[in-house]
Image (cartoon, rainbow, N blue to C red; front, side, top):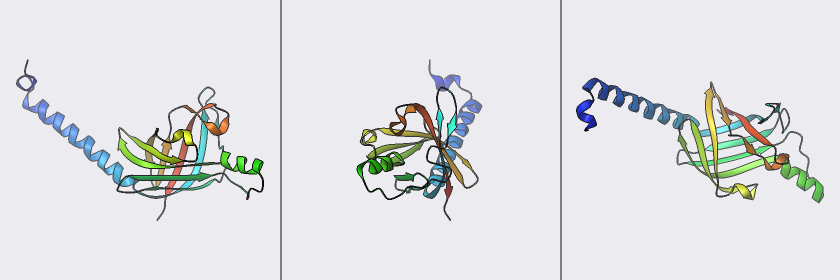
Length: 166
């Protein structure tokens, strides 16, 4: 059966309007994501207990850059890091950071980054998927539950909040 014959002009018009609205909203979100962002917080939420932990301290440091051409770069470091002077301190420094870069796209209220380089080599070649939402000048990113290499493989959601830089 030919669907076009069955659909009334009003249904076709409504479908077209909904499609255009969704495409327009996604384009607006893509434009809002572009820019320089300063880190506000990093919270890991345990997938089993839902306990939230500011794993990198209450005042972590970091920046994220999303370009209009589709490049994503994020660097996050824990609060109070010192300069490492031995192998144990260097290993600890690695556990108090997250960094990756790659090409990103926005779809279905998610930012999806195809990782090209990262502090954790196992992320290279993967897609890092983050749901996003805006709250004023804040951008909240949330990962799906996943084992995290810096916390002994516990399954967590990573919830990161960024503030737009002027």
